[in-house]
Length: 285
Image 1 (cartoon, one colour):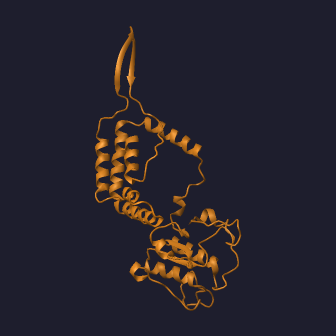
Image 2 (cartoon, rainbow, N blue to C red; image 1 turned 60 degrees about the vertical axis):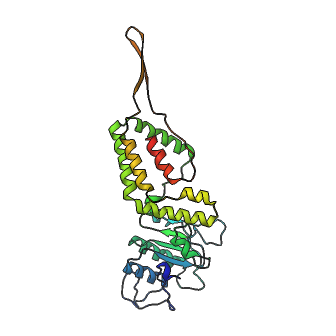
Image 3 (cartoon, helix red, strand yellow; image 1 turned 90 degrees about the vertical axis):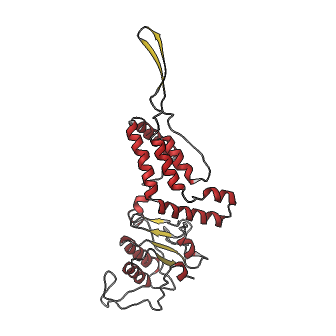
């Protein structure tokens, strides 16, 4: 079953494997745990992903038995290195979570993403391969994904207002270029977008969503090309901003003009259609 999932299982009866390769060598030249072995092998194979299975759900901010400990979904070294406290080593292995984290950090820094998750829970490997949010992810670009701090609704609204004013000051050609860049990005990232959509669909099916809702969530063949085409069509339309709609001479030398202007910040609630995001954003620009 694992091989059908394109997974190569690594099993090792002994914790010590002879080697002379850094960074896991000591005076006796051996690996001290299976996690470090798996990390090195994943890098040697240039693996797409390394999964380290544990007897807990992933990496916690403290010993998992403590109520205050929280599961860390994405490990960011700069943020979590000094915050985590480890409990006792595992009863059934030599390195415990400390060794897993060290191996995960080393492998992910070398370019192999790592997920630490439970080996006791059902379907853990399948869920990881589907892209579901389980366990703890280690990735060399993780620090770029996480916001530097939690943002309140008010802060987001203020930032949106600031950006809307900057957008209003752009010329027609500058806004047109933004739309063309959006269309180009859609086409350049089509494979990634489809992969993410497939993960969403798998999660929707597993959650038992209605078939109509899942259908709306599906990016059908040709949809991305159609979206890119519609965005470019929008970019080539006449600019609706700063158009003089009406001019009235109120008095000698005093002319009143009615001019089209931006609405400002938009708050839009829409259903599960992923193409709606592109359409709404493009129209807003």
